[in-house]
Image (cartoon, rainbow, N blue to C red; front, side):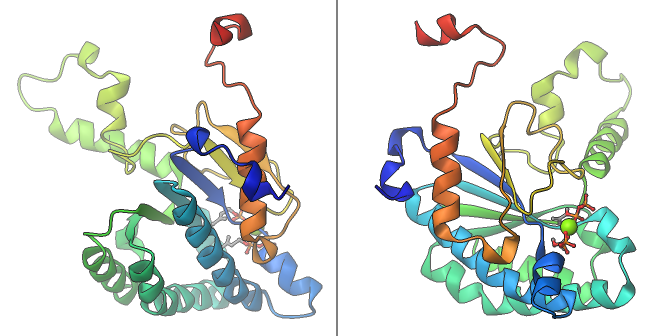
Amino acid sequence: MSFKEQIITEKLPKHIAIIMDGNGRWATKQGKDRVFGHQYGVGAVRNAAEAAAELGVKYLTLYAFSTENWNRPQLEVDALMNLFLETIEQEFETLKKNNIRLHAIGDLESLPEENYNKLMSTIEKTNNHDRMTLTLAMSYSSRWEILDAVKKICAEQKDPSLPPQEITENYFKQKLTTAGMPDPELLIRTSGESRLSNFLLWQIAYSELYFTQKLWPEFEKEDLYEAIVDYQKRERRFGLTSQQIKS
Ligand code: IPE
Ligand code: IPE
Ligand code: MG
């Protein structure tokens, strides 16, 4: 049976997050420049988005560029920014065809103006699509996001100030860039690295983590299905005992 056939529709994660890693190593293996790997990785993004939408996943969040990635060689950063611009423009048709809404999280104002404008106009144009929300994490890091949330709360502190007991988990969650989205049930990272690299640290408190050796440009629909099948075999206990979960 293929992995796709093994997926239990009723137990499908609502939200899948992916750390798309390994573009550079994939390119180096082919004797090519790292940027070639990023270009090739766009195909894997298209496949993952289509596969998730076809299955009925409601939210797919992709880590595309971290705040730390700004420190890469300028040539690579520039090439990535150009690639994002081109891709958002070219993939509008894919979004339309698949009824996918585009969304972005991160320090978006730090993006080049052209990128920011293109991103915002595409988000606007896909606003009425409702099959799945595809969120790109761009110039994103969790520590940036958490500090940003704290700053928003401080800025709201008027007289009389907000009593500390009103700063609940639910209140705080609404100040994060992912406000309104469910937490990811499943987090996938490609390329064999077993770390989180500053991604969605608050939101993945109880996510199931799935690490695969596949490099991002090699990641196919079947790999996404395999990760979902693996996820569905796990028992999510949220601090309870196995017996409590079963009864
Ligand atoms: C992930 O691939 C893409 C970005 C971080 C933009 P990498 O560029 O990190 O590829 P490796 O990890 O060097 O192979
Ligand atoms: C994480 O990948 C960021 C993205 C996938 C966008 P990195 O390749 O930047 O992470 P580290 O440096 O290996 O932790
Ligand atoms: Mg990497």
